[in-house]
Length: 137
Image (cartoon, rainbow, N blue to C red; front, side, top):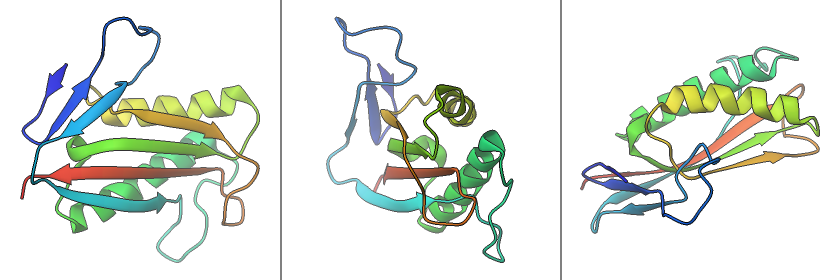
């Protein structure tokens, strides 16, 4: 179990060690919850970054997620949950996006869901990352 003042990540015994994430997270009472929209790999001008590059789009989506979190007074270590969406049915693409996300989070291995989806909202978009964070009041 990793302990932070606001977020506690849980790795219960009896569940597979193959998972590269915590199975659950809890938030301290009174914490302020932050719900982020799906972070997309968009440049400031609204164009899609890194067209055709799953890993590059994952990095750009994470960069954009960090900007939104900072605006809300949070950082990556305050994240409680993520959902990583990849517009592909190829597991190699999902794995490529996941590796970028895991590297960005480091030891803060929040509960996460990785999904292959048919299509995402912007032209040439391959990756979107949703997150929930919690910060001390």
